[in-house]
Image (cartoon, rainbow, N blue to C red):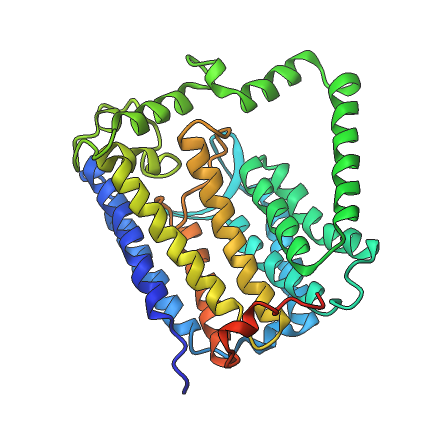
Length: 369
């Protein structure tokens, strides 16, 4: 059986996971966070290795993908009625001590179904109808997630669709038309439909640092933590913003800020380099995929990870609104971690059918998309 595991990818990933565990242990060692996260890392790695030996060509079948899409859309609908409310959002199913967030897996299903759709229509991809139809696939989970409300995940779903549409070769003129329509709708809503209190909520979301004692408190403490790390950091366990509990959610949403306070600019730069190397290996595997479907799936996974990294780190340093998105492979939580390992496991399984390609051929991979 052909070995399909990218050991370099795994080698770059393990220090990132370790950085998350060390940061959690620095401030919450007396709790069960680290132990539970270690258990989820073990489960995730087991899933990754098991999936690497599966032939995932069955995922090219339309009936399989439509079934998965309907199934997870049903989970999202059910969440609106029976989901556990966490910080005002119904994003979780609670089973005793275990919580599951189906949105994480819906993102993977969306990547699969968009990869299938775009890979079958590479000749006529510039027709406007393909923006409309592919947009409908994304609109369903986007709407259901937005209603939870989970704006962060809704943004990621939009970015997955946008990124794959651009890579697949959809006309830039048509994309520009879509953006102009969306902008027009937003203007109409702002000036004619939204109430003053609704506008205030949006403004606070977009500029949280304008309300430091209220909605902007978390973002403000996060920027203090990042800045106080300076060049080399305060040392493991000596981050005062986290230790004195000024920085909330330092094991989940703001783990990058807690890490930056301990390790400083140098440690943060090394962490970002590791993330970059992980994305490089994902794209490397993707570009030798057996077909356009595998190529687009791998690129979609890269878009997913990059989007969540940018949004999470952006909110940690005060450049983007606080959305509650975890940092891949670092933030505490089994649901998102398992989904991330599933994505890499599927990619590893697809690697078993990878083409043997000369590096120069990769430059021309998307000609004709």
